Image (cartoon, rainbow, N blue to C red; front, side):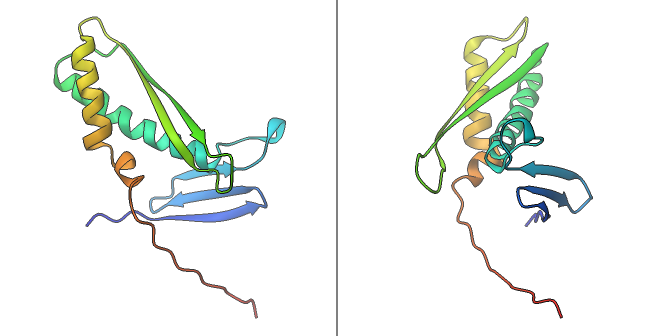
Length: 138
């Protein structure tokens, strides 16, 4: 079993810092407009899904000995109007610039990346277990 951990700490009411076991940091905020400095948790979920899918897609295209001149994913999540405002659907647009890749082989690689290899996509189907603990300062 491969376990990953992070620690999330409040910086301000709408701003947080997440640190992984090796000290890498991600800043998160829930500000709007001109006060917004970082991605929101829901934007980070899209970023994680796109990032995971991208790595697998590019590696598989290169394994097929296809040139990858440029690559990007545009991720769009449609959210529920109520509370919680979860994603009801997510659309990923994979855009590959390559002089020798075909549409068919790229579509097959994308399907494998998202449906079979992307851990983030699979995690969206997982059960979430949680506990809560209150610490009272002395």
